[in-house]
Amino acid sequence: MNKTLRTALCLLLAGTLVPAAATSAAATERPELQQVLDRAVAGGGVPGILAEVRDGRTRWFGTAGVADTGTGRERTSRDRFRIGSLSKAFTSTVVLQLDAEGRLDLDDTVESRLPGMVRGGDRITVRQLLNQTSGIFNYSLDEKLVSTYVGPGFLEHRFDRVRREDLVEIAMAHPPVFEPGEGWGYSNTNFVLAGMIIEKVTGHTYAQEVARRIARPLGLTGTYVPGDDETRLRGPHSRHYSKLMLPDPDAEVHDVTEMNVSGAWAAGGVVSTAGDLHRFMGALLGGRLLPPAQQRELLTGVSTEGGGWLPDTTYGLGIFWQKLACGVTVWGGGGAINGSWTYAMGSRDGRHLLVSNVNGDWDNPLATFNAALAAEFCPAR
Image 1 (cartoon, rainbow, N blue to C red):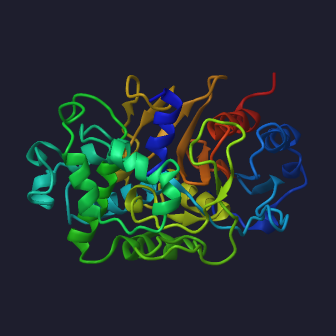
Image 2: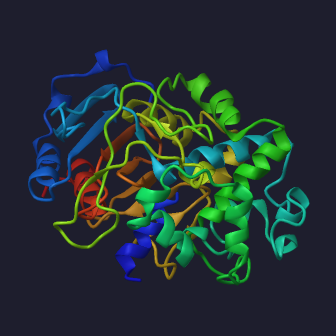
């Protein structure tokens, strides 16, 4: 399995409160960023891309391509899309709030919270789930699961409902990647377990806790966790297109907007919008969702070097920070799921953020996101 495909598979299964009226004329002038969007469509052939910047009290929104190849409709700021592993930031936030309330402790073992669920769970802590140092195998890399849900087999199985317990069982069929705390390795299994802990502690569903603790307080009207049998996107949305991870540039493009994301769930199942992600990430980085002690935990990082993941990154609890080629560091998260790739990154205080989404899963969207970040955050040469 090549490195690019491995990174994509890991990601797959898996803003400040500023009104639009605050936009200034100066904020609308971002020709370099718009050029990045245009190149993604003209050069890479992706269906469409959107980007929204909020910096203090200014806002810029740009698009290229389309939301729907059948109708030619352009992408809009109201469009909902699947955010993949950016969901992990929502999951960590809920866990950290429960820690602040004394309903769990980050040093609790997985065994104490989910008895008998994880082999060696008495040596793995909740914190190690959230910072990806548990050593638990990533179920998304199981060969049988990959052949069923990632490549051409996805079309046949895209509406399957997957039980969380089955995902953990798949992971447990593989030996640990390393001993707990002795390495770093991206694993969606960690966040499925975190979601299960949330439900065990609260007595509510993961979807209810995300809505109660994050979406409703922040006014995230386009953000939700789909139900286990829900396959359609609610409200206005962009269509999602996929080449099923096939390397052939002429591979057939499939509309995969309708799908069951129970296999991603707390690791990658959330639906959101660009504006909602600005509000959420701005509030999270800005310290408005967590008390100071939990905020420090959120931002305590582990190097991802040697983990076969994104280069020049450090991983906190469900979020990461990335050093750009120009030397500037941006903070936030990203994720991918069939037909949709998303990045939400910006300044350490959350006041200056760029949210981007591509509604196609080919032509290495990460290169496009990095170019967009450079256009927005790197000093002009």
